[in-house]
Length: 318
Image (cartoon, rainbow, N blue to C red; front, side, top):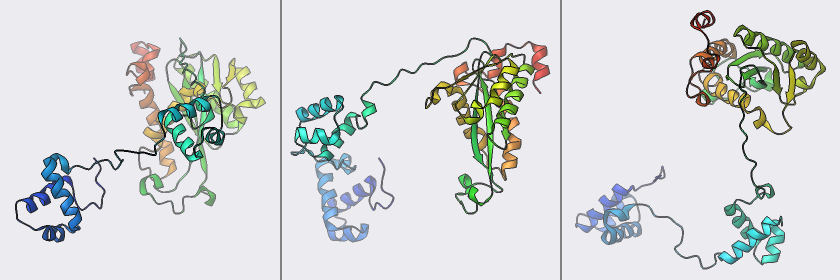
């Protein structure tokens, strides 16, 4: 039970007050002055304690026991049925003979406020490539630079508006679909030159782990639709596939990795400046790939999917 921060009486105090009156220690007027409430409130809790004891000292719902003007079930069923025929709220109100506000409340309770709620939800299709390198996901996250501890820690936004010249930095991320091994760099922009540079660096990183990349998936950002990015994919022998518009779940592994990075790296520590945050990224990436248990990998780190031999493990684990 949530007690209002300014509440004068908690259940224990109500019981204490009621007993002081019932046992003759205080009159209702004296109890009202002692507990800084009205005599009417004192009388209410005294009578409730007499009737129900300690159990009656808890708060009750303010919902009335009876609602004679409530919409009957037949009307509710008709409103829902008309909504499933894609009628608008006002049209339903005219047809059924109730107010648009009543229709809105009924539809909200039925989960049909939006027309798109009528259609059944598309089933979630989860996929995972069989071997590392078959598909890598690329994405970009824009982060604000800062020259002192940010407002997420201090709550003070003074002087931290990026319109005042602080600027932005762009976290390019890449994650392997099969192993979940991730690679990331902070670059000054999200233009085609940066996207191409990051793609080449990512492919080189995976090659250092013995992974040969064959396909790359991106969203429909302008840098990924550029001819320069297409030429880079061709030169690296990669097949480039893009997500359907407005379907971020297709690239869900990259989206999820960004969420994890924000929570465990970008906003996890009170960095003095954004340069300190950038310097910590490689350290956090190493922990993510080599040590952090991954939920979709049966609580094993991503590097476990490579089945490295002991000598390779020691050579790569630096």
